[in-house]
Image (cartoon, rainbow, N blue to C red; front, side, top):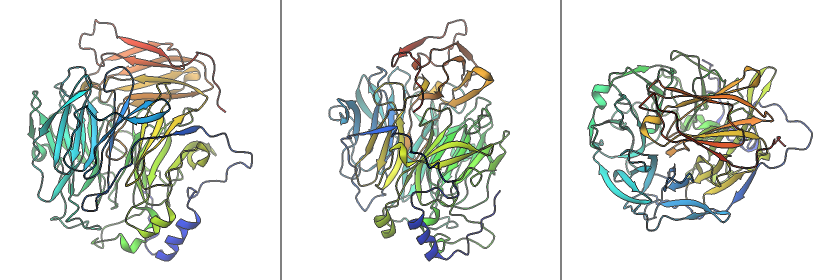
Length: 551
């Protein structure tokens, strides 16, 4: 682990450093003096602007959902107090709100949401966390029926997000509810006040959409307020582990012991204000690496130490943990050029320029601080490249993805159905911003059914020269958001894929030999219960199958 050396930094210099280095990633080498590449993303109008009532938390979330099962994705976006939620659909060059008439009604502020076929009827449903509790919206061909999910929430708390996984391999979806103290009693910088902490809840699905609270017996009762929890298979054993991004404390990881219990794993004892969480295989070794956002250097250190004890280490920094296998992680934040950054919320990994390397999007700004009202920390996009044989992230404004609002989270989704992943910035108390991906490079996209049994599916793409790349189906990453079920692989100028290997959590493996590039491949069923049945896929030609080279 790296040492944190800024505990003595003058807070005035800290603030000044934000103004000076606002649009640069700290420690990044200067870019070439040649002209920057053309803009790779094109903005489009989005018919939604979030409103924030100051007696609620200033957050919103979203879920990517194929409402009608036609292969076209919409985005459900949570509205503020007294504001309707939105269901955004790409039509005629803009994102249009089609929520009226769908049955997605509400009575209170909406926070996080998750899209999943929870009742296994073939339609993707919605789980929504709101100020007044958790609701399941059962989808019937585009019409939704609300069903409240009883959750034994602690006093003075609200549910922030819902993570879904089949934790016990019985075929149904179990729920982990991220819980936060409500806005009326919220106090920042309380690391050690047990009365302020609000433990999360683990709900075991009884098989009939009723649930049993097994938080205590499972060993997953978190110690602090939580923005986001994610189920992800960290050791590639087919069982979903749990990562908890605690807002005040240390990151928590729980290993699935395959008997409805979890073992806590210590990966870092450093305290922070952990918020957003991005997950991806950044080093291409086949397992999932973890990236956490934090308050950064844009807030003076003395304002964020709170009630820390002398024996508790604390950091402003973001944190990138490389998964070395067997639940051992190495902090590579500095190595990858991601230290010394400002206040940040949600984050996601995605190959933005389709060159085969995972890049990073980070939503920034904080609505309550005057310094941010003035400076407006733009949403960051960082391309991964190699310098001196080592990977590093570079802030890249030339992509055209800057977001000068109070960013909450980036949402990855193929809005126009061309096979390339587009972007929606969620903003607090302001308009959402949408961008279409116009990158000219080869790609292959694999769409996994939004079903409980498909969560944790891993796809490895093997190209020529023995190179491979792995993506996994992971829900709820970012912050209060559920990302696309599509796994997108950038190929750059490569014109051939040897095979795609699909590994399901139940141990089944399917192989697609020589899949055509510049297409979408839709897996129809997910894990195949009858191993003798052939895999059902649909190949969609997203554009003419000719070589497309990067700009």
